Amino acid sequence: KNQVEQSPQSLIILEGKNCTLQCNYTVSPFSNLRWYKQDTGRGPVSLTIMTFSENTKSNGRYTATLDADTKQSSLHITASQLSDSASYICVVTHSGAGSYQLTFGKGTKLSVIP
Amino acid sequence: EAGVTQFPSHSVIEKGQTVTLRCDPISGHDNLYWYRRVMGKEIKFLLHFVKESKQDESGMPNNRFLAERTGGTYSTLKVQPAELEDSGVYFCASSPNPGQGRNEQFFGPGTRLTVL
Image (tube, rainbow over all chains, first blue to last red; front, side, top):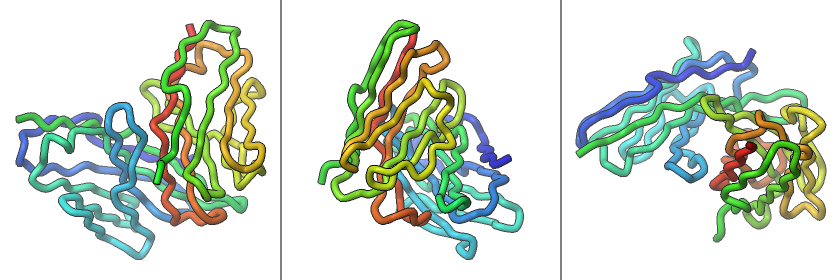
C-alpha cells in the first residue's frame, strides 16, 4: 500500500531557530518527491521537487534531502520566520496505468512564535 | 496570471441534499485534478481530467460523486445525495502538458464542505 508518514505531527519553535521535518514513504513505482507548504485557508504550494537521483534541493531557507535507498526525506528550515508558520506536506508522485498519482502525508503543522 | 480558483469557499448543507463544487484551472492547463481532505486524514486523490476526458477516476469514493469538465475548461464536482462522511475540504489542482509526473500541480484554495 502506498503510504507517506510524516513526523512530528506538530512543532513549535522560536523565531530565528532552525528545524527539520521528516518524511518516510512506501510508494512504488517512485517518480518524485515534493515538499509543499500550506498556509491556513490556502491550497498547498510546492517548495521543492526531487527525483530518484537527486539527494538535496534548496529553495531559499528551505533545504530538502532525499535518501531513495531508505525512502526517507527531510525538510530543513533555517532561521525560521513568523511567516513559516504553516503545514508542510510531503508528497510522493508515483506512476502507473498511464497516469501519475500523488500520495500525500498528513503534514507537519509548524508554529513559529516570537 | 490568475491561479486555480474554486467556488464556493465554504458550503454547509444537510444530509441528503445536493452540492456542486466548481473549479477553474489555470488557463491553458490540460490537466485538472480533484482531491479531498477529510478531517484528521491526508489529502487523497479523487480523479484526473486531461482536457474533457477522465484519465483516472480510481479515487472517486462512490457513485454519489459526479465530476464533469465539459469543454475542457472548468470542472464541477457534484455530490448527490450528500452524506455526513462527505464533509471535508475539496481541492482542485491543475498542471500543464499531458500526464507528466514532474510537472507541478497548482492547487486552488479548496472548498470546505460541511454536511449536517
